Image (cartoon, rainbow, N blue to C red; front, side, top):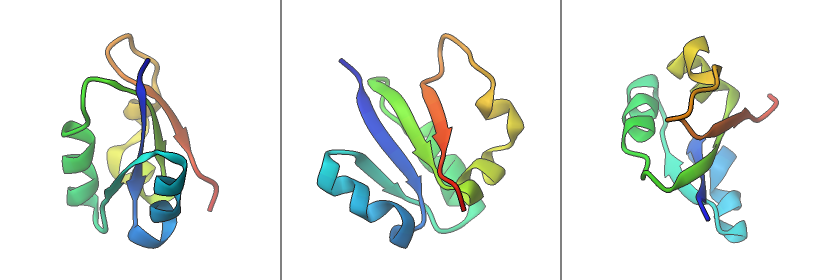
Length: 75
């Protein structure tokens, strides 16, 4: 079974750790891209803040066998 991860600002994603989500705090676009590339291979679902999704670009939302399922939190 895969893991769930979240990428975004501390105030937006830290609460998800209480549900067992692997939280990756990223306060700026470069940190978001770094967090995305450092995700473990076991990540099956990644929750992104809207700002994190913008930093990664639209292509990250396109399904691909090598990418985890990705969802974006509403603003």
